[in-house]
Length: 428
Image (cartoon, rainbow, N blue to C red):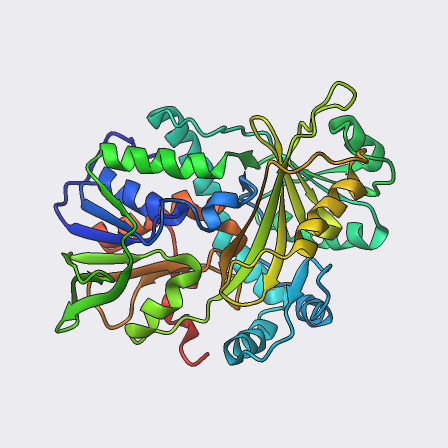
């Protein structure tokens, strides 16, 4: 494993556009390896999708593409109580995205995806240990594993099919019956059919993690500029020369890394490389579930049928989930938030939920094949892009940062990223 104190010696000027978990991880590893790094973030650091995710790092979690998923998605159209919700509206981009999505909902593609993603997830697990120990990150890090639970026979069968896939790629979830799940997590209510314990799972507080990584990047020389929106990538004769900001400032660079999540398509289209990335809205509600008569939630859990993650954090529990395709907006829908409450009541032995400490929504960048985009922008020397991590931004953020730094500074990453190249969507 790489020593965190080592650099590879490069004075390359790199601008990273985007200050979420993927962007700050890119900045950290670039600065660690000697690059001169500037991060330009349109808002404040970590306040988009990175702020409110479940905080769960799950190396063996498969992408959303599975046989039958498109039928599920189309059935959900108009059903705001569905975990996967598509707002009924005419949107040519979304229609094209769904048309492409359907061809990736196959067993063969699931195997292809897991073969590509599994090495990245496992590398992130190693990098996290290295970062926490070597850099002293204070981000609520707990390598606790997580439970995946179901309360219907159909749900349990769905979970079993998924487990069979991940087992073929080096993971070994432990099956637990309903009573065994309650022994592991006393807060579960009766009626669980069964589930699995995934030992590779790790929990962090995501916003703190972003700030901690950003702080370590700055300590290694990176400059972070919030409130700076980039509206153009500048180039001459096919080579990147820098970026222009919305305020008219030109920032010179030898390389530019686009890590703007759900907002990536605009800048990528201006480079002649359109990406079919759709924003998928997720929600969270933070609540305190600890009182003298109720045991505190002890194990992070995925509530299978409702696709809601529950993560214990310092002084609260975060209920996070849903996948809503309703456009690039941050409108909070009360019925979607209530779905999180309904999941809590369905799986846990709680009746009266306390008022939420906070409620939030954010946009996850989703590609039609369920895989992230990591690679060089075709046709440009010094332009790189990483986006499309969907629900795996936190899981894949550290390894993505390391791979991008390899790509920018050495020309080749330590792991195979062929499956994630941007040009795979040409003609989509």
